[in-house]
Image (cartoon, rainbow, N blue to C red; front, side, top):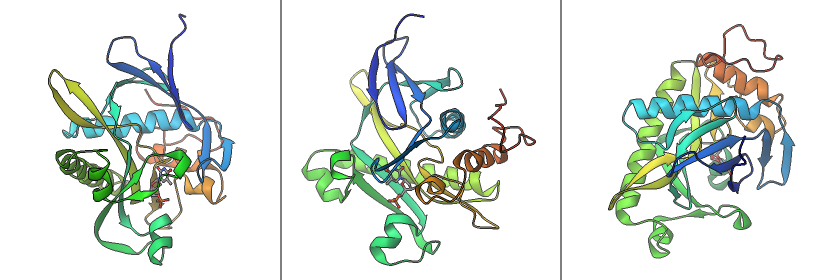
Length: 253
Ligand code: TMP
């Protein structure tokens, strides 16, 4: 196979030049990091599960008219996506208090919020992705007012979609993070959901038991991360129902 050009390597993914102009191959690694990579491990099977789960969510979003960068899955660990310019923001939507919001405001984890709350963090590992306001975003030109209107609308549409999909399989969508990309079509630009949507970037709690089925299992040493992600995949029909949590992931085509 011809050598591909690596464009970027992040903590959980590698991006390669795609087969056609304007495309990128997104490769999902098994690496897990937390606390700005102070904690790290390799979790066998995580990349395969996240590739498949992100495909599932992005396909669902595309189907309900929420534009994403996703084109198609290529194999167990890779997907073809549209090349886009990532806006340097982590867009977080919260339905229940948890994590940094609970710490910042002294709210008990699991407290239902009066309405979904959208937060923005500046994507900068050296600074630890600090929380920023729309004032910072406008003043430093990271996104225009029109972009911010579109980003808010995309974030809330993703929240409605994901909350419903999760609720249907007995999972509470506590919060999640997305990234937004700009794609250029002639003289026009439009914004799309980019990066990935997976249990790495969401908080997912079992509705009955409160069991955590997301990356907090790794961050807080709560058990086996692959088992948690496999459970999400099984409930969504991405893994066969009878797959043993201990076996390596076997994917349904
Ligand atoms: P937080 O409570 O730590 O701010 O996290 C909010 C949401 O964002 C949670 O679903 C986890 C996700 N997240 C990421 O995807 N990447 C990150 O680097 C961090 C800190 C959180």
